[in-house]
Amino acid sequence: MLRLNVSKKKALKVVKELDAFPKVPDNYKETTVSGGGLSILTFVIISILVISEIQYYTSTDLHFDYEVDTNLTRKVKINIDMTVAMKCHHIGADVLDQTGQDLFSYGKLKEEPTFFRLSSRQQEYLDFIQQVNEYLTQEYHAIQDLLWRSNKATFYGGMPPREDVPEGQPDACRIHGSLEVSKVAGNFHVTAGKSVPVIPKGHAHIALMIEGSDYNFSHRIDHFSFGDPVSGVVYPLDGTLFVTDSNYHIFQYFIQVVPTEVRTYAASVDTYQFAVTERNRTINHREGSHGVPGIFVKYDLSSLLIRVREEHKPYWQFLVRLCGIIGGIFSVSGMLQAIVNFCLDVLCCRLKLGKYGHHRGKGDNIRGLDSAMLPREMPAQPLLDSAEQMEARDGFPLLSSGYR
Image (cartoon, rainbow, N blue to C red; front, top):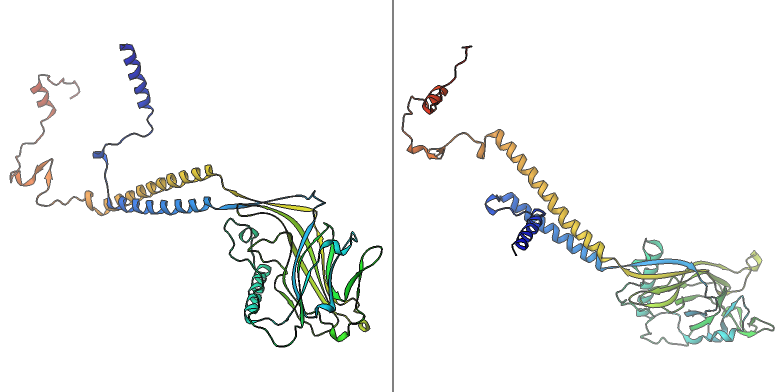
């Protein structure tokens, strides 16, 4: 039992010697006003940095991976909502791709008579969409700041319904709906005349009964996208408006489409991003400007696939940075306090201020005694005896040397 107690004491002694946090008695500590003020400033800075770190690590990052798209059999959905300044029975909207597939197998778009002029509320919406697209085109922006964040989008888009009914007959045609096409290059077009199939493949537009004065391909694109629409996203062609005075005018849009898989905390969709190049001109055969009047959207799908993943930052980094912030600020503040105290000590020593002053008042102490208790005249006898007297008194005579 005694041996067990001895071993236990030795173990406790070893643990005590390994203590990296020695305790300093309170009577050895000295507090100052400058130290208290620096401590308050240190705690404020630590609090601000800790809050900012928490906000930083609770946010998410979007990671983009690029790889070859191997899904070649997937169909591509084209979402269309546009208005052409011609009557519905004068125009036809179709898709023609490299496969030459029958146009009726892609689906059917709805044609709805309407007015080309917008109401006040519709015009406000169009102006807003145009401003957003202008910002996205001209100003710097990062896609991760605009798309697919965890927070839900509050903007869902869509032209609001008309609040008034103009007088007269509708002068335009709204073409809207979705088509599912093959994953190859093709073009969506709106031109004069209804389309009819042509054997063995393709189709043609018959416009024999349409007068030249009826041609007017001024148009407005309210929405144009590929894949499943994502709420809160304004696509490049949304809000496009072109008005022409020429009856024979051709509008061309060249689109490069990139398949995109989005896997975030807010959405899990398969959509498509695309970039657009626009060109339009007036057709004049006499001046060498040939072509077919109409609206042609030519698209080509990229062979690359973009995968978007939303991830949180690792929390072990948060703990490491948090310890670095707290320990680093405490260390720096301690060094600043030591430097300030050193400068004050040097300054006070040179100017004879504070504890370095030699001028004493009436009640100053001398060697622990009050100066008022001392006699008015000090004795002439020295306070300390000579070395010979001390030796003789203690019984040890001073040895004399022969060199005196």
